[in-house]
Length: 238
Image (cartoon, rainbow, N blue to C red; front, top):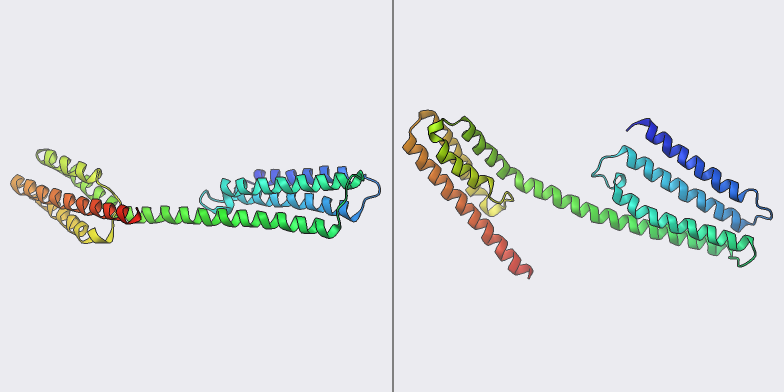
């Protein structure tokens, strides 16, 4: 995080505090309600400054340091500012006034509303990030198999590349998300790929093509299991 961004946040809050103070302090006949409105405005500015400060120093996937947090924070703080300004102005000009206790209750409600919004946003984002992490974890095994197959193709002699290219394409365009039910099949595919690499070093084209055919069959079996599992899951959800 560069210090210039943090400096701008501090300057922004100081300017906000100065503007609010310049509006309120010169007023004559200030009541406790007006002072409370002034404090509420300063608090809103402080919360906004803290949020932006945290946003500038964090990583994209952290709840307190991404745009979701600011998007949920901004409307709540805006409402708090408008309410404080409106109540303060009405009280100062004698149009309408509010008991200090009720004003405090309004601010507590607004802060509670803000807290609930942020908690709900945080919970929603946590679910999303957990799902993303699970998908990444579920695809790691198949990605390793795909990389293993691509490396074998890259190192294979020209005479064997046609057979291998078809196999690599089959693996590459298969569903990368794995499930427990196909774990043994995928382990078998990994073992067969290791055998294939050994056969390539021997150069026996007949054995290489036979091994490729076995791996293709295993991959298709794995894909069929996955498709059947997704189909049954869709039926259950429906």
